[in-house]
Length: 503
Image (tube, rainbow, N blue to C red; front, side, top):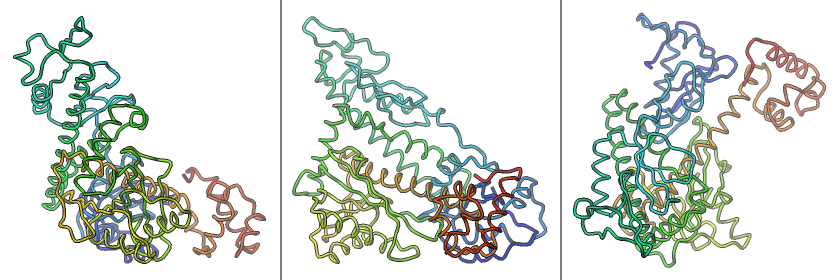
């Protein structure tokens, strides 16, 4: 949606809020007078983009829908990100989450083709489907073009000796299987007669290949999306963003499948061995921890840490952090703090460090993590960074950056770690953002500054309990006298009685 400019006066609080915005990429969330999100937009420069909503009219005619949006804006929230492409992706996720009335719904993922492999079958086959179900199957894609995908599967049948949906295998007297009637037409270099165990080895290799193809296509789409955004071809960039979002979502594996399926366990072991060899690690990296830093609204920073054990998520040991040592946006200081807090605590509790630490970022972030260990006077475990732009492995010891093939199982493993850390950070962002939106109602109360608001929320735990409190109970909070308590109670009662309910 193009930027709109309002004729009406702008409250001084909003003017000041706009002046404090950074000239960095991000996403903005426009809210109405009771805090509901009514529009989500992206920006190359948050300050320039958001301020355009609050400038006097320049004499051109607005579309009625834009005028209606501008008239309803009473507040806004922003989320700072690292790049324009990331802003495009985050915008889409937030539109799906909040469903604002002035945004157009994103395209449904069902229009894309997926490849499904049900590993519970004795002879798993590679089938094309359009809907991902919550089952124990593996899914690859989505893929926007059916023709190239079907050709890829046909080539995979020849390259790996696998079954597609049209295969009609026959069990032989000795318990093995004959996969195809015409070996010469279907399989080159692989015998048609095969045991179940040998066939599953073929499936494992084909899955690794197909996952590499999916991620290779994902990186290509992200690059094309970034180029479109730089050329200001935002409609094309947004369409590519839809596909990227759907692809990233589909590449996530179901939790129960990761914990129980023996083929995944085998594949994880192969990935760990490949990662050890590629990074020249002293031991197999059975325990890996990954850190990601995220900005919230340009005012504070959060971090996430995820842990994989045996190549699979160990969700009971995920951690998230609020930055305590400073206020502002500084990725390096934030990384140094959370790494120091994590491993300082493990050291004090006498717990083992992981076999590998992965940092989401380049040399600067890796150096900040290393600085934390130096400050603690401790020897760090093996530590690397994963620079997202070119998926390059960064070392802290002077070794040159390492570019692994996109289908390298070790690279795909640390990519999954990085993506999971980013997802976990975004979930934390959403929780904090929801809390902030619910609590923004208090901004309209005269005489209620940040200290008193914090005291209220400490006492009642949230807006729901505060709304139910009496004036006398509010008066017991530190910093509140009878008069202010009565005014706040009356304000909350009026809000409850109004036609709209605060979320």
